[in-house]
Image (cartoon, rainbow, N blue to C red; front, side, top):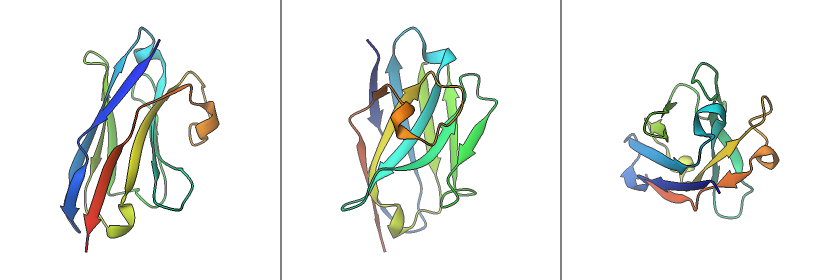
Length: 124
């Protein structure tokens, strides 16, 4: 059974940075894509970024492109989301997920396992 644990969230001022981590247990880590989603209060969960199993393919939502960077370390079975130039509108609970799908990583329905989420709060 795959388990995911996020960490690294917190309170930061606008313009600041945070690095989220997602530690994964399970034998399929290096073959599965990893994705980050977020959910702000009163809003639906939305796609943030995704990375292929070998790290060669990466996608970002338009709202974070150029500010966030996704990466992974398959030896450590951990995915990361480096968040720079944070804005108050980035405030949300951030979730990482894993999927065996080969495409459509912006669709949360394709993810078969999720972490518990980590809160990111950006003050103005």
